[in-house]
Image 1: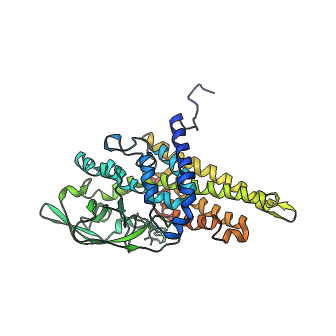
Image 2: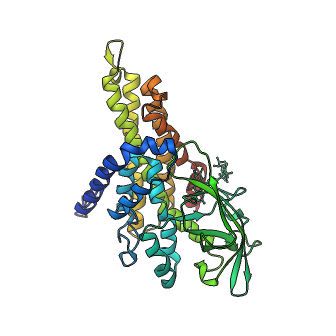
Image 3: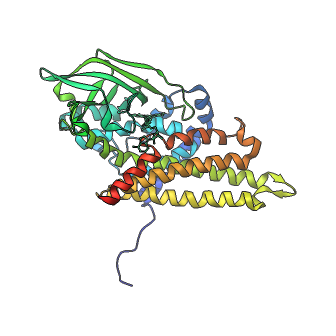
Length: 383
Ligand SMILES: Cc1cc2nc3c(=O)[nH]c(=O)nc-3n(C[C@H](O)[C@H](O)[C@H](O)COP(=O)(O)OP(=O)(O)OC[C@H]3O[C@@H](n4cnc5c(N)ncnc54)[C@H](O)[C@@H]3O)c2cc1C
């Protein structure tokens, strides 16, 4: 054996402190109100403000613009702790990160100075890619951005835009050249109060109800040339770069949810008895819980690896997709089994596990479906 550096699986002291702060915050501020937010489908404004004040969001925003100046590993360490308490609330308070990452990646100094401090100060920003006729097919978007004078005119409809009802800014992806496929896509920062921009009512959904999603309508919305983020025709590339950063975060939400499934199942199965035994001693039940633990550790390792590669400045596309697909699919599996472990009580709204099942499903859909993650992995393998 050589004398090389040991492989390090531990977090730094600072990261452990941050993670523990997130764990305590989740226990104190999120867990007690998670089911209320789920029932009332309310954006968690107070939790958002507190998380912001405590430095648990906007982590990767550079410090000069009011952020934490931290990395992707810090983000996943915090996210999994928050998500253990409620994935919906975690999504609501963290999804600003998508627009912030895009601004950090592609913004001019002037754009960063104009928009990032607003996000750091608590304004919400919607990341608007998906349309009624194009979700997985990002290159097939139909919203157009036509040049007019020095600026552009945007027309189209976006759907399922998280936090749209609360947002004061949007990052809108639109076709500047409808004939050029994915090379015809560009990104624009659009103010909520721009004439012609309308946000529809909150869309009804199965889970993650604390994170409202809505349609955004763009009818002859004029934006100046300076609203374009990155180069013309580089919007697809930017969206893919943002995915490399956001997918480890979504995977971390899934890890938090699997942890919760394990914790709830472990506790319940030791107190619930049947046929003279705590149900955990029935092998059929015990093995489900062992399998949850196996998938939790595997999902966590994939997630931290995808984040670590980003922080190390290495390409992480394959690992981000693998982490996202495996963690999301495992979360769905674990939530289904947690309901099973609870039996009839698993189906009851009085216990937290039916919500875990509803919240988990979305993890397999947004930020690229589990099928799309596998297609990306194949592309990366044959690259
Ligand atoms: C609650 C919620 C919040 C969301 N938040 C946002 C947001 O903030 N911003 C935003 O832009 N979008 C957001 N989305 C949209 C989300 O990213 C899309 O729903 C998702 O990418 C899937 O697109 P689609 O719904 O059009 O499904 P489709 O693309 O129509 O897919 C339908 C099915 O076909 C499969 N499929 C499609 N194409 C392929 C293929 N090439 N190969 C294999 N299988 C394929 C899919 O995997 C899926 O199973 C959100 C969605 C939801 C439900």
